[in-house]
Image (cartoon, rainbow, N blue to C red; front, side, top):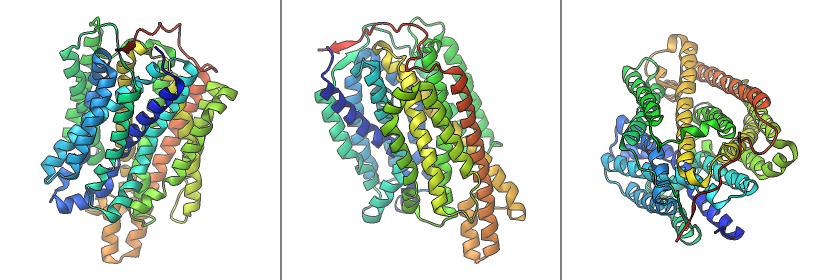
Length: 504
């Protein structure tokens, strides 16, 4: 039974609002870390685990969450995840110790993982028509993407007026709205094929993704010479390889690797990963520039991200009409072209560059993100049938999360390496720890020459990072030109008939 159009779009709106909160929760905590260090007596390791616990859980649970939703019912899992997300948010807000907050963040990551995989998996069920599905996908991915740069803005505004727990309580209204909408508007659907859940696949995938993600986080924090990072990263790769080999022997696989045989899913996934790699690296770097070079606080840094958000919203708003007029290939080419141009322009930023110029190239980057992300997502989601929507969307979400984490680690190392090389005689602790420490030392000493050198060294690293991102975007531009057909569907053959139906 197909839902009426108003009900479908209302349900999507509620899901998008919930996903905006999930995206926001990835970054909102960063602004509260100094306050948490004081109020909870948290050391450096605890502060790192406040974020890492969320990220690792998010990575490790996605694949089994998608498969469980396909088998037992997507609606009940999404509804339960919303309730858990709300409860975990309350626990985070009123945690009285570092250990409590870390445990609450684990639960928050668990709920976010289920929401991210299965809410996207509900799109093929709610919108069987390919044209509507493309528009719905644009709404969903725009909500996820907007949440990340909005995190520092929302967090800064709340911390200016309330205690640190308010950055978690802001989740409650969206959770309530989302849970009511899912309960009242979304039908229960599940796969008609009762696929068993293979515990070996669950353990291999979760352990592999957690090891891979933790290794990449360690690389970003400690550099490429860290032994623990290499050990966990290599162990993660071995477990992922074992998972892939094991899955090929299973009749009912946890991850539907056969989706990569579909041209649309394969190309859409690659473009998603390419964009996530560069985008997460950019989101990691630009706030450091605003705070350490321009000298603004966290809220001011977040507000200065608004031009990028504006560009993203403009592109997303006009995407459907543009894609209908010029086709899929040209839309992707235009998006990657804007990304390449904006980041190449940003690579010429120096100490004398005005914020107006920075805002201008950030708008161009936002336009590129707003064109590439929804288009590539629609390309991949178009290959998903309602029968395997949960597992397929979970696979896509897990890969995108891994690509983003990789981007932060690799591009962060690119920046750090150049920063160290440009410091010269100043390359010593604590200045070598990062631009924030270097600026603090120079400020305490009142040494303007040192401050100039530290900021110049950081900008040299940031410019190199942006140049690398521009090169990645150029690669995406070339590949979209030669490998994408200029139409909305890229599937190699006819898609199977939907096998999922509403469950009474």
